[in-house]
Length: 293
Ligand SMILES: [Fe+2]
Image (cartoon, rainbow, N blue to C red; front, top):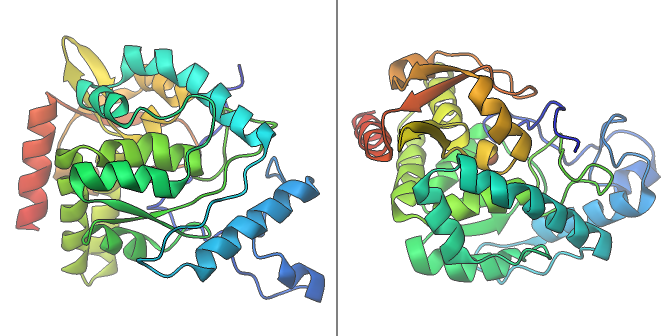
């Protein structure tokens, strides 16, 4: 099982995947620029599909129905392989609130769901909706959109040669991580509060502090439950490798001031995590902190 590679760059880390005007006319037709060490770099068909999916996002206008992404049989197989690794890992390592959301959404184990079908279920539960973006967007744009209950969501899937590894957030991370947690009204509320806090923030330094808190809670948060450490962070619950590795991390008590000043490296398993005493303790302290921001 290939799980020990460095993982996700994520939403709070600005890496715009799309749009590069340099190069030849042929290059400009390729909206999505992959780096030479991306697993799909040499796969012409994969790059064409990534472009098609990016076009869907670029043409999308909020409120319209989201067009279906063209996934191949091989790509549905990637989703199946990911679920096969994650289902037992969730039982063992994910917190109860997350596992309850997974049951409510009852995602298909053998095919990638389309964003429109996820929206039907999540909107009914918490009012949140996913909207497609071509790649990562700037942290401020991503975080502010949460205020209105919109999650800017990538739609492509990782390359089939590395089903358990992706160098960038893909539809697996977005759905298994974010969309599942956003089905919980309490997680949805915390995401909205992040968005509102960012909207009240003008200085870059303060924005970076909020981004780090988002990283150490929504993306990589852990908590104590029934005597063990469980994951609620989306970067953890969307990766079997991260769920294993989190037990090797140094755990600090959840302190949002400290988290706001703690530097992190998104390209490695996280060596330090902030651990809440319970789900309620995490929810209460984060909620109060964001309201008071
Ligand atoms: Fe994320």
